[in-house]
Image (cartoon, rainbow, N blue to C red; front, side, top):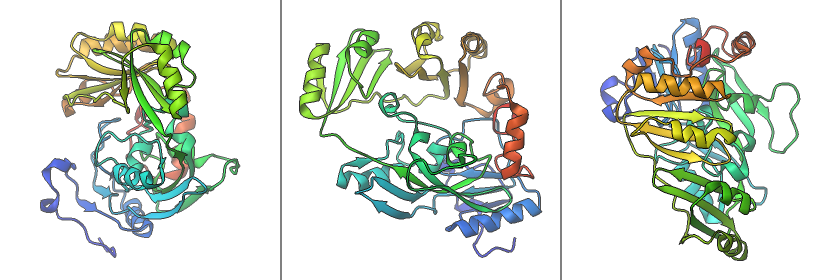
Length: 370
């Protein structure tokens, strides 16, 4: 392959990264290098898998690549404007490192940060939001601008560093949750928020009562061991709201950890159906449920196809979904990771084709095999 950057020998890739075997593994250091690699991939009709921190590779149908593009060398902070509450960073930047830097000015991206290796691009491509979503909305609401490398190697910049500046397709939003099918996210401009002065966690007996009592809580979460409300604001605001709940108050945010277990699912329901969804979870499944949002992240020790299909059938009947987010490769052969494909697949195929006309990038990964 005639490129200006070197392929990485398979022997130099640590086993814990779990990168699948491929003819070529590349780690571009600039968007121009990524563009060159994707132009060659298009010319040679090579299937490409984008790989960041490797934390969200369980989402979607399996990709059997000819080329793997590792994005972690795209890790520069291009612009940080603390006064404007914006930052432009390359997508291979680790969220943990970015948040550590932003903490110096008491600012945050609000991106989910469950793993030290998680990257900006990985979280956005998977469409993931943090537990703070109940108050601040999903991650896509914070993306102001993107630079993307399309499947055929074009570098496309869209959006802008101010709000309400988009005409036509809102490409930055389209990229969030697209799992790389519409392009390799190269860099993003994110809207930041100031970090409030006071934070507490309050144990509650009834999450519905907590939601009805509190004004704009950060989150109300449920686990098998109980329920907690998370508050953020001035000291006076936090103390006042915590006092209304009457439960045990813990300083700071005691976010529940998600156990590391072999099989993981994401149960996505209308918020009004969340309680029934928790009652329907198979015995032994662990979970963290986001009250008021309707998302429950579940983990299990064993593959339970029958129980999962039964839960999925009910979820889809009420307008939700059960999505497989991690598991052994054989599980993906036995059950569709997404469930019933959504309506409008023909439109989605046409949209994706405009960015990846030769089905090079993460081909087939989305619902319906798009």
